[in-house]
Amino acid sequence: QVQLVESGGGLVQPGGSLRLSCAASGSIFSIFAMGWYRQALGKPRDLVAAIISGGSTNYADSVKGRFTISRDIAKNTVYLQMNSLKPEDTAVYYCNVDYFGVSGRRDDWGKGIVVTVSS
Image (cartoon, rainbow, N blue to C red; front, side):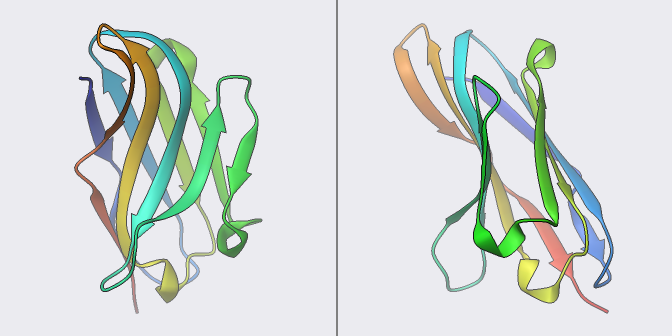
Protein backbone atom coordinates (compact mmCIF):
# COMPACT_ATOMS: atom_id res chain seq x y z
CA GLN A 1 0.00 0.00 0.00
CA VAL A 2 1.16 3.51 -0.76
CA GLN A 3 0.70 6.66 1.23
CA LEU A 4 -1.13 9.56 -0.37
CA VAL A 5 -0.65 12.99 1.18
CA GLU A 6 -3.14 15.62 0.04
CA SER A 7 -2.78 19.36 0.57
CA GLY A 8 -4.11 22.68 -0.61
CA GLY A 9 -7.73 22.66 0.46
CA GLY A 10 -9.51 25.31 2.46
CA LEU A 11 -12.06 28.08 2.30
CA VAL A 12 -12.31 30.28 -0.76
CA GLN A 13 -14.84 32.80 -2.05
CA PRO A 14 -16.86 32.12 -5.20
CA GLY A 15 -14.79 32.93 -8.24
CA GLY A 16 -11.57 32.18 -6.42
CA SER A 17 -8.90 29.55 -7.00
CA LEU A 18 -7.25 26.72 -5.14
CA ARG A 19 -4.57 24.22 -6.05
CA LEU A 20 -4.70 20.72 -4.62
CA SER A 21 -1.66 18.48 -4.46
CA CYS A 22 -1.37 14.76 -3.83
CA ALA A 23 1.98 13.06 -3.37
CA ALA A 24 2.22 9.27 -3.52
CA SER A 25 5.00 7.45 -1.71
CA GLY A 26 5.84 3.84 -0.98
CA SER A 27 6.55 0.79 -3.07
CA ILE A 28 5.33 1.94 -6.45
CA PHE A 29 6.67 0.26 -9.56
CA SER A 30 4.52 2.11 -12.03
CA ILE A 31 1.48 4.37 -11.99
CA PHE A 32 -1.32 3.81 -14.47
CA ALA A 33 -3.47 6.76 -13.46
CA MET A 34 -3.94 9.40 -10.79
CA GLY A 35 -7.09 11.33 -10.20
CA TRP A 36 -9.28 13.45 -7.99
CA TYR A 37 -12.75 12.57 -6.82
CA ARG A 38 -15.11 14.55 -4.64
CA GLN A 39 -17.96 13.83 -2.34
CA ALA A 40 -20.42 16.49 -1.29
CA LEU A 41 -22.58 16.04 1.78
CA GLY A 42 -25.23 13.41 1.15
CA LYS A 43 -23.99 12.63 -2.35
CA PRO A 44 -21.90 9.83 -3.84
CA ARG A 45 -18.20 10.15 -4.58
CA ASP A 46 -17.73 11.22 -8.18
CA LEU A 47 -14.79 11.63 -10.52
CA VAL A 48 -13.56 15.20 -10.92
CA ALA A 49 -10.50 14.67 -13.11
CA ALA A 50 -7.98 11.98 -13.94
CA ILE A 51 -4.69 11.72 -15.79
CA ILE A 52 -3.41 8.44 -17.16
CA SER A 53 0.14 7.29 -17.74
CA GLY A 54 0.27 8.54 -21.32
CA GLY A 55 -0.79 11.99 -20.24
CA SER A 56 -4.39 11.90 -21.40
CA THR A 57 -6.87 13.63 -19.14
CA ASN A 58 -10.53 13.20 -18.33
CA TYR A 59 -12.81 15.73 -16.63
CA ALA A 60 -16.30 15.78 -15.24
CA ASP A 61 -18.52 18.00 -17.37
CA SER A 62 -19.19 20.28 -14.42
CA VAL A 63 -15.52 21.29 -14.12
CA LYS A 64 -14.41 21.42 -17.75
CA GLY A 65 -12.80 24.73 -18.58
CA ARG A 66 -12.33 25.60 -14.89
CA PHE A 67 -10.18 22.81 -13.46
CA THR A 68 -6.87 21.49 -14.76
CA ILE A 69 -5.19 18.27 -13.68
CA SER A 70 -1.45 17.85 -14.07
CA ARG A 71 1.31 15.68 -12.68
CA ASP A 72 4.98 15.54 -11.80
CA ILE A 73 6.06 12.04 -12.75
CA ALA A 74 9.39 12.24 -10.94
CA LYS A 75 7.64 13.16 -7.70
CA ASN A 76 4.63 10.84 -8.13
CA THR A 77 2.51 13.91 -7.52
CA VAL A 78 -0.76 15.01 -9.06
CA TYR A 79 -2.17 18.52 -8.96
CA LEU A 80 -5.63 19.95 -9.44
CA GLN A 81 -5.78 23.63 -10.29
CA MET A 82 -9.29 24.84 -9.57
CA ASN A 83 -10.34 28.22 -10.94
CA SER A 84 -13.64 30.07 -11.02
CA LEU A 85 -14.81 28.07 -8.05
CA LYS A 86 -18.52 27.82 -7.34
CA PRO A 87 -20.40 26.99 -4.15
CA GLU A 88 -21.38 23.67 -5.73
CA ASP A 89 -17.70 22.71 -5.84
CA THR A 90 -17.80 22.45 -2.05
CA ALA A 91 -16.92 18.88 -1.12
CA VAL A 92 -14.31 16.59 0.33
CA TYR A 93 -11.78 15.94 -2.41
CA TYR A 94 -10.03 12.56 -2.54
CA CYS A 95 -6.88 11.63 -4.38
CA ASN A 96 -6.78 8.23 -6.05
CA VAL A 97 -3.88 6.31 -7.55
CA ASP A 98 -4.04 3.23 -9.75
CA TYR A 99 -0.61 1.61 -9.65
CA PHE A 100 1.47 -1.55 -9.75
CA GLY A 101 3.36 -2.29 -6.53
CA VAL A 102 4.76 -5.17 -4.52
CA SER A 103 1.26 -6.61 -4.10
CA GLY A 104 0.40 -6.33 -7.76
CA ARG A 105 -2.03 -3.84 -9.19
CA ARG A 106 -3.79 -1.71 -6.59
CA ASP A 107 -6.10 1.24 -6.28
CA ASP A 108 -5.59 3.40 -3.18
CA TRP A 109 -7.22 6.53 -1.77
CA GLY A 110 -6.08 9.51 0.20
CA LYS A 111 -7.85 10.56 3.39
CA GLY A 112 -9.57 13.48 1.73
CA ILE A 113 -9.25 17.23 1.94
CA VAL A 114 -12.03 19.73 2.44
CA VAL A 115 -12.76 22.46 -0.09
CA THR A 116 -15.37 25.03 0.88
CA VAL A 117 -16.54 27.69 -1.55
CA SER A 118 -18.54 30.34 0.26
CA SER A 119 -18.81 34.06 0.67
